[in-house]
Image (cartoon, rainbow, N blue to C red; front, side, top):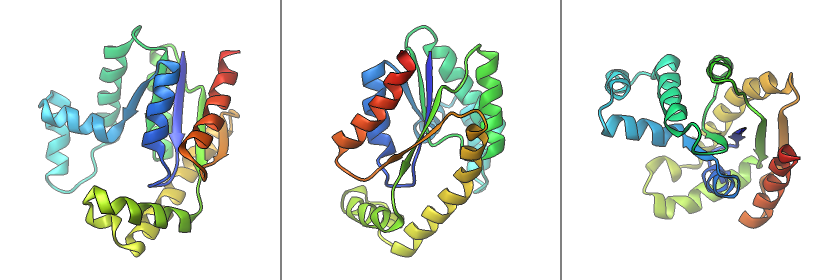
Length: 193
């Protein structure tokens, strides 16, 4: 089983690359944003619990998110060759909780792929994306730069967590979609040998 975490700042192309990797290696792409939307829309018990926090503008507790992930892993057990986590974990406690969850399911993180993209490139990409995304926060360079700083601060601890077990590979996230995918595919292919 191959279980990947795909890191990258907002606008780095994580979603695009995760979808391509999922298709190439028969993995389930798990975006926590999509997971939340699905649980809320279907009014699952965990979705109802999450809404209580979201309606107050609070962060959903990690245990609720882990519960949602656990359900998703169980739903696809035996149907895919692994999972690719996009947008999770974002903090060291989340990484530790994910490790425990995967350990309970007799698996673990195989590799953490970190897309390295300079801040100015991220700002340019997200402003371009704002022309179609209709997200107000995609139009303001200062908000984008703040999101980039928050990403660096939060994910640095997660990368450090997985570096202890030599599972982090940093890759250049600048180039064409196909060039970046080629580099990612090459790293994942090494796991199959």
